[in-house]
Image (cartoon, rainbow, N blue to C red; front, side, top):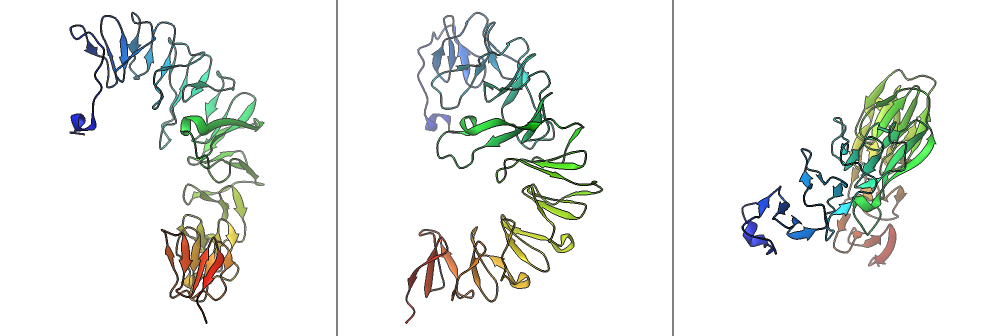
Length: 310
């Protein structure tokens, strides 16, 4: 980034005469292999960084945990056949790999049938027996994606060929599958599937019927649907928050105020609840206090907390 020395450096206990660089974070001298400036417990003679930038020696494959003090041995990985497992259609890589017998995620062996395991998209996979959801716990306040992502067995593998629709939706026969951050698994059967239209990563239309986060919404008018902001959507007739109808909302004048608050020309809403007496013309959010107010009435989590009205 042009300021390497300003960011700091680590002085290594390495032999200056024999030290060579192996990659951005690896080096070696006549006695040791170094990772991020620290000597590692590996087989020095056979240690290498392969063409996929994977550290390994004759007996082991190693995983680079970003916040670990040293390399982690990937239990059960075969250094001769271990390689990345990527899907070209995916928008980002999750740290998958496989060898001749097993599948690995973030340096840990996954409890699946390795030889038949296949990823459908970012969040769905199968093997010869089961269908799996790849679930990351976004609500966890500790750990990283490596700690909070799991491959979860959901149902027996259906008969048929899986077709990815996007990163989160897939099709098998006349059924639609979903796993995403809002809904870890959904299977929606249809008598037949004639058309599939992608609206965005969370919403698709099947035979003119909206599926939102894996939930079927038959009442939505697809021709006039508008995804407004994150969890808000509307059609010519109604407004919805997180797939639930905001019963009193006026579609033509509706607008979000924040991720949870919204308004139209008549009312202010918290999620799907109308806030009594709140003035939509003056309502705004104070993000420092997480409070919504029209200057007279103030709300927190949709509850009235203060009123200066006489």
